[in-house]
Image: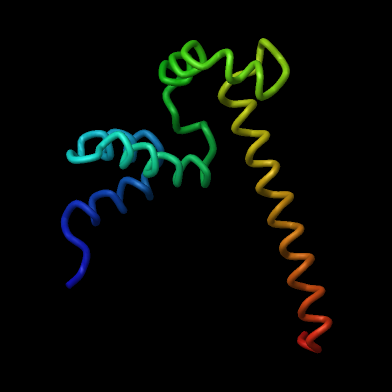
Length: 111
């Protein structure tokens, strides 16, 4: 049996971006906070913070300023800078993984 209506709707929201995915996930029912959190992470990781309404960013930054200050070592740090730093880490990890894969291909005699 294929995905149900809820799963298809959530997949559409993933394609549409962070905002729609968070709204859909929070409206899903059952364990909606977890669903919205996970669902919002996927398009957020793919698209960055540009899809998040500025009002939401400001709310998150006010509520979590001690975390951002500790994580970045800067009292002016915020969501977007922290997110950008995490994306940079992921890009470097991807590049390192590609280099390891190329080395393994060379060792195995693959082109």
